Amino acid sequence: MANLAKSIRGMNDTLPTDTPEWRAVEGHILSVLQCYGYHEIRLPILEQTSVFHRSIGEQTDIVQKEMYSFEDRNGDSLTLRPEGTASCVRAVLQNSLLQNVPQRLWYLGPMFRHERPQRGRLRQFHQVGIEVFGAGSPQSDAELIMLTRRLWDSLSITNLRLEVNSLGNEESRANYRTALVNYFSPFKKLLDEPSLGRLNSNPLRILDSKNPDLQELISEAPSLSDYLDDDSKNHFIAFTKILSANNIKYTINPRLVRGLDYYNKTVFEWVTEELGAQSAICAGGRYDSLVGTMGGKASHATGCAMGLERIIELRKVQQITLSPQSPDIYVMATDDNYELLAIQTAEYLRSHIPALKTILHVSSGKLKARMKKADRTGARIAILIGADEAVAKKVTVKPLQTNKQQIMCSEHELKEILNEMLVTNG
Image 1 (cartoon, one colour):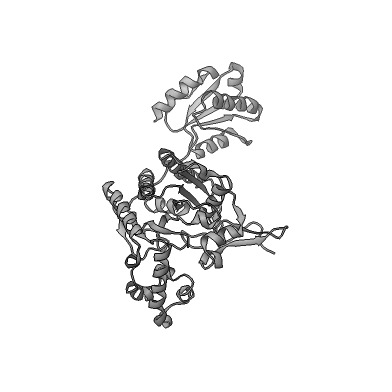
Image 2 (cartoon, helix red, strand yellow):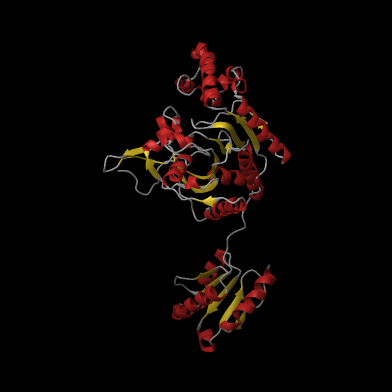
């Protein structure tokens, strides 16, 4: 029998010791997105499987190998979303949001892919997606770069490299695919199994191979820039000029192709050398044909997604740490007879000084054991209620991290005394 007390491989718990970092990262992201005028959209985790078949592409690894799909009781094929863009396009079309463009949207949540779990790659992972609909200019692409650059500054992340490329329009990309097939076909014996499988279905993905034995062969492959249409070339030149004008360093990577079929023109990745094989922490680009592919009226679109696990792991590697999330106040009865008064005091503090983090002692034990628990929380002050306090209708305020004397005071004097002690304690 399966161990019922064990999570599914590659689908991890986020423990209370880790959630403060998650909340901090999410808070920085939300702040920057609001600064740029983006609005949140919340999307379902399950979609019709056809949503991803039509958008991502039948020949991609995601559709062929990685999707969690199943039939429900009605016989409908459903899929746990492997990425967010297709779901967002479906929502935009279903809810007629393209009647008012441009639309700047963002979403956050879990995605699911059946991959081999490793550092920076899980079967349930979390992404923030950013999408812009109805804007075809290079300024829209550049805004995503400026936004994410500002986000890295906000998160104190350093040593990221921006790689950019242009995939051209559908016709130029099709011509390039033909050139790649013609180039790689004579070398079939040299190709590894994944690349051989992609040769006729998605040859651009061969360029993305990390196999060191193929790098020399790949380096001699035709360059996509030689097949770009004039409109795409001009779009890309304007895009890079905006980056340079805003002091954003970038590298043109002619092998950057992205793994999904819907991209065209601008594509980009923010990459790091500090996370091993999983180097991209944010990636995206333009996908002008996707809205039409999914049944809507043709509309310009561009977007990107960033992996929260990778961002958090990178902050850990770069030793960007949060201060301990300790409570300010620990309220306790000195014995079980005064629990009700302790509860009332804790609630009084939460009502009248809500900015303070107040913990209530909720287990039995002698006073020495209660004080040890208060110390272990890292609280700065303990408030004690016992027989003497009950008779005097007061409480005892005891500093836990300094040698200052404890004070007995009325409930109404608490705010002033706590403020003085906490400011003094720093």
